[in-house]
Length: 419
Ligand SMILES: [Zn+2]
Image (cartoon, helix red, strand yellow):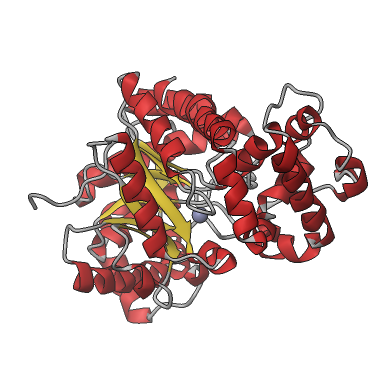
């Protein structure tokens, strides 16, 4: 339909815990524009994050609007209700125009036998040897395989349909962008499974523009990818090919693309991702957010004085509360307790030492991924400091802005989207 919101080829999920770095992040997209590459910003914040901080979707919307206005951005931008479900979606409806429908919890939930049987009989075209252009090996799909994938994913896709229709009832068709996420689950989806899932999504008439599968390997928060690079590259390439095939064959949205969650700091993947995008002339949505909170801390520490002192306090408290802080993120962090410096030791560090341990520079011998990951989940500590933290952010804006913009542009946008 005309006028329906359509997400561009390249987009980046941005956002920061305390909604103070909107302009610094917006600037990074503007720099991409200056390099001739359009990267659309999408402010995202999950319900989990709002609850930990005590923030609201309306505040995220206000911060995004303000940043866009201040920098004179005239291209589209969106505010993403990240990882919502039927129970949490309503508080986001008004402020958001991008919805990440998270149905990972329903994966493996039994679906109605009749729905499964009619899915099976409706999709005999999938059976046999199926060649997807760009995928080296033909898929060999039999009825048993479709049934198995249906049993695992059909209930989840049906739930996504219910959530989608609930949003559509309130906002109107074409007035928001829809993503479906299945990343927060145990096992990655294979390209053949992805195809069956997309067929089911098309059947539910969910006009998804982005899909977040679970990829092979570990996507820990704030640190590089850990896993088999070759397997990732091949799987990512096959997923992109499957999407292009499904778009043509099942009348899904022409701009449908992959969404990479926990996408910040996966430096070793950005080269391979960029190559695949070039090969298929495909787009991608890269979700980052937590990385900006760490740049805030780096900016504070680098400024020295009260900023450095506060950064050290955040670490000391995060260290003391590490069990509680890590619990909600257990599946997506990998901290070696033996590598965490004692807070008494960190308290004596210079600004350079603190920054060197925290900044994600794999080539720097002082870079400490465990220290970085603990601080990544430690934003609750800063939230508890209230105005004291926010006032120091304002006082050290120059140092923080420089780090936030540089990190987002040079370490993320450039290698993924510009190359
Ligand atoms: Zn996610």
